[in-house]
Image (cartoon, rainbow over all chains, first blue to last red; front, side, top):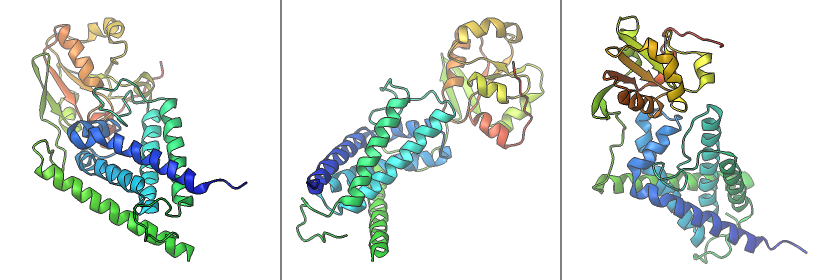
Length: 152
Length: 162
């Protein structure tokens, strides 16, 4: 019995797409707060953090919408996969140098209470795998654009 | 062909990323809650009603060997032991009350305390400053660029394995 790749891919798109839209919410509406989260990770030079906080949430939001609608699905999934890989690297960096900071992943750094831990690594790794699955296996099924080539 | 399709996918991703980023920049520009594209740290902050100047490692170094200025390291113990500003007092926010008992004899009330942690916007130095303000200290500066900048600038470092 072969795996229902089409259905699994749709499910993966819905999971990653909705999570990215949800995660972009507070960041889109409060870039100043998200900029603080970015600075807390101490990876980027501080001068660049505002730029990232202004642009990244919109990439998250856009990629999430594209994934759910099935428009340019694989390029959108490549974006989410890349972002998840960067987030994972950020978490690892923060954990490595012993930063006592909030994840800032889904909620404001000022509101969230969960410090970075194993849970964040597992969660991000799972999402990374799901997102990579879309890049590799999605063939453009269940797309709102019917004329989209299936082999992009 | 697969390589070509892969490159095409990467290119589309890149264009998508640039377009979405541009939308973000445009919305931020028009929004009343927009923030500047380039972040500038504030020159001073208020802690318990006290104005605390934020200085960089160059300014901090000017006070380094002067009388009446004491450096306070608020990072984690293992990083303090690996290297710190020579003569800095170790005072992390986690157990500031216990450590303060040991540190108090070295901190005169009229001294200016220069606090630092890792780099810009780690808030450990601020937390310790808030505690010290409650203890009656009034003169603070925060080396906001942190120990990473001090080290990168090649300024003196002392390590301790205690």
